[in-house]
Image (cartoon, rainbow, N blue to C red):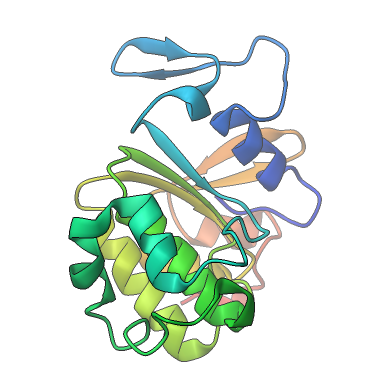
Amino acid sequence: MLGRNGTGKSTLMKILFGTLSADRKFIRIDGKVYNQPYKSINEICYLPQDSFLPKDLTVKKTIELYLGKNRVDDFLDDSILSKLNTNKISILSGGELRYLEIKLLLHTDCKFLLLDEPFNGVSPILVGEIKNLILKASESKGIILTDHDYRNVLAVANQFCMIYDGGIKRINDKQEFVRWGYIPESKID
């Protein structure tokens, strides 16, 4: 999901997750209506723009809390996180923290994930790792993501939409982003 600054991408994510009120809002998953999806176990997870992890815990303890003790070793079998497992969340760099948050959510049992600006403030190496995590998770989960780094969104998404003038426009061809004035002609691949 793409759109210019201020079009409501993050607001829509919060409404979909159920933490922001809206008139007559609900989502339907497999025919079941959810008014507050965040209260439903294993249905939807949400990655907000700001960090949500407790700052005083270690990386390892945080993983234990989110995934359980029996999944920690497999989760830490990772070139990035293996060297950070004893660090407190508070001393991770912004990119390391974002990577941990995304990987944690992608490894939960949730059926759907809402990722709000997953590539924001992340180094190119970690962006590549995050894209790989998203692509792998998308084989078994529904993922909606939004980010201003449209190239990375286009690289991992298999369906596109744009928030424009208070509505959502389904994009069938990447050239439509140019026609709607979101991406300059010279930037489309």
